[in-house]
Image 1: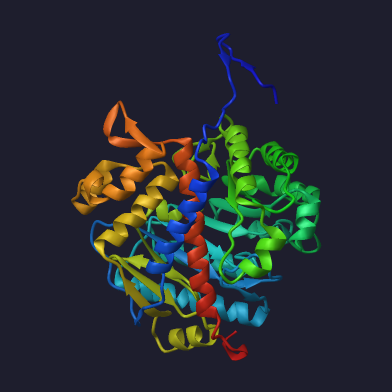
Image 2: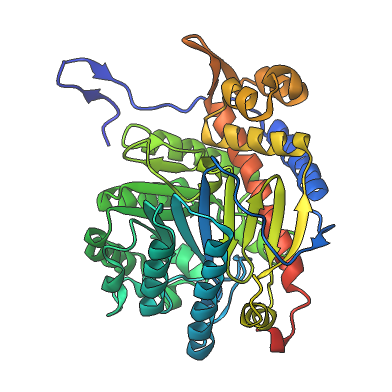
Length: 445
């Protein structure tokens, strides 16, 4: 790519140069601070629960559905998933649709639906039937997002999802064969070029294709990062997401020394990603980029304060309360068969906890707004979260918008901080999943 671009109006446009000046010691300090808050707020000191609350009039909700099956299990993934067995998977989809019926009976409607896993496309016919059922139950659904791995893109049943899925997110991770070999993905999903060809053939099926990449792998040089970004750009998808490699407490010993790059390497790689993608794409969050800035993306929690999850191992956040569904497939099926929902635990959060959570999401999404905190919580953001606001201002992560006193501009330093904070938050959620899965026995799977 040329270092200088000549525009049609003869103005010289310099390429984007990320202005990340936060020193490494400060990044390490932020990680430790986030680990403290994550450990404090994501502890499993929950109460038992067997029912979701009814919806509140005027609130917007999103529906999340979890499909906990994969043909193969990746070593660095701690999402809730089991090895695929067709009979269990088909029975699961039936239970999932029955749980949606119970949600409808509570009075919910949804604006959006996100289907995650696991691998959502293990049985395309059942997935298509489930989406059709959801759209019939909840006529407010305007957009359906779904995940898949490269293995299923050329399967005979994949075209059944055309017209049902608006946004398909494909877990590529890397187009580099050495990285794919190191992460045990090349034998499962094929080479980087094979994945590229599959995406190119499938991209016309859906209005939005998102290409998921991961950076922060050991041995992932600047040249490899650039090759991944160039390959993704050649596909010309509507969205590209560049996740940092996330190490949980459960995978730290086995993965960190083998797969993870140093924090210094990760910060340098992130700067390279910003420089490469800004200009081609609008930045939707610290790690998501899109052709337009008004479409949904993987981090649905940014667009929806409240969401309801169905399926084994799903989470819901409703009325400042986190609800957790059964992680045991056996218990989940027993609940549904008895006419009960899959939820088994709940944890209520204080107003301050929720404000800190929304502050994190505002930093991550670049949508930090005084007006939002005033209208949602009835507080002055600068005083209610004085410590958080002051620290971010001191390191140059945020600054006032000279054109709008209610708006705060998240700088490149802020994007880096948002990325680190969200990475630690998601690692904490993965730790919770791992703890909930730990007691499972073979009869639960």
